[in-house]
Length: 214
Image 1 (cartoon, helix red, strand yellow):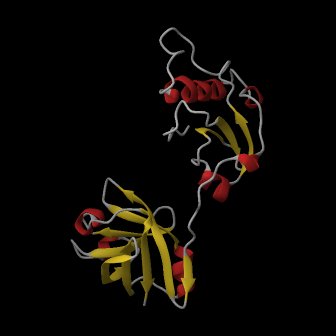
Image 2 (spheres, helix red, strand yellow):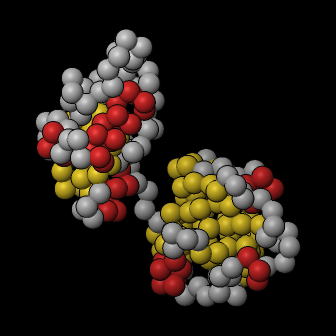
Image 3 (cartoon, rainbow, N blue to C red):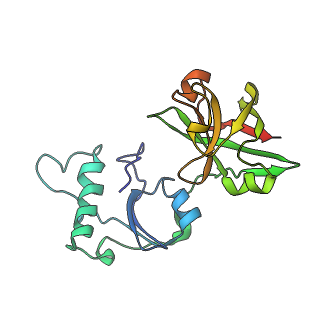
């Protein structure tokens, strides 16, 4: 169940999507299904029938701002417990109508690998890119290389240094910045026993571009 829902209570659809690998995802249809549709595949989608699959009670029926509790959780629980089938969620609609957001693709050009910071790891201050390890391999980068790393925010350079590329944190000195392969097989940045995002004041999103080269 996903509740990233700034449009709660508006006419945006509440839905349950069926993924190509057999999962049901209960979510607002507001762009939050983008990566699932692109990377996993969505084979069917149904709009939640609020007349049946919404929590009812004197303290909930007039509430339009708490669909995480009153709509999504309630429908997800009914579906997961077998009280309703997927067909009883509500009417289906074309998968092609699912709202998606733009996905910026990483690229390799002339020995330079470019991408963006998609997300940070708030527990440790690591920065995760959208660049798969396979693109580093294709570029000829190997563990132990010191790569030229440039970070731009809104096209302005905010960081440029040579940074070591290693498979795990213990290969870098304490306090040293490093490039590594994270658990999603994506290239990421860290400071050994420190926070890359805090030390260098780095954020994430499409305005944060990153380049690697030998």
